[in-house]
Image (cartoon, rainbow, N blue to C red; front, side):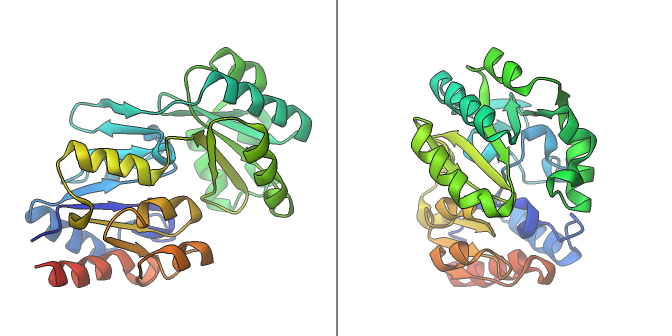
Length: 276
């Protein structure tokens, strides 16, 4: 088969709404692995927030995390690539946080930290019921997030602002204008995510393809959100989920079924047969 690597977002893409792998998806992933195809989770999550069943899945040797901020070798249990925020960018982000008085999250070496009040009661900040459980289980609470971010300004993988839906467009403009050397994206409606300008799932996937000596013609990618667009447009077989955002579906070369209807599995089977 000419397909050698399949990269996939997790939430809303590879995983069902219950955050599971469907039986059909498992079956097709196993088929791909049997043919020697790399399976690469590519997520906005930090490394330690990725479900163990995904990190330890047969065929998963590399994981793209923090929206392209880092790549981990599962076998070696360490980072093999990173693209950290610059100190100047972090300081500018802190200034925005103080002015806007929004909740801030930061990721250091694959570990997410967030403001104490937010971790204690995420639903007050527009988190869904699942989101609240996820936040409580994965975020390390910090009393003074601005001081913490300043102290670790040269170590941050990424920064996220928790915002109201109605503030999102305005905040995007502010972040893009006021913070140097960054890219801004979003994986969920109430989050604006900030990474280094040279990060992003697309650029980092290209780095990994080069490392593995795989061409973009031999790669697939799946995603459902705006933060997946660069990845879907960087390879030949880029597929947006049927449940994806409008921007994602319009930008992707192809659209497959939803995450609840085995969209990833259907896309793999369709394009593997075409690629043979």
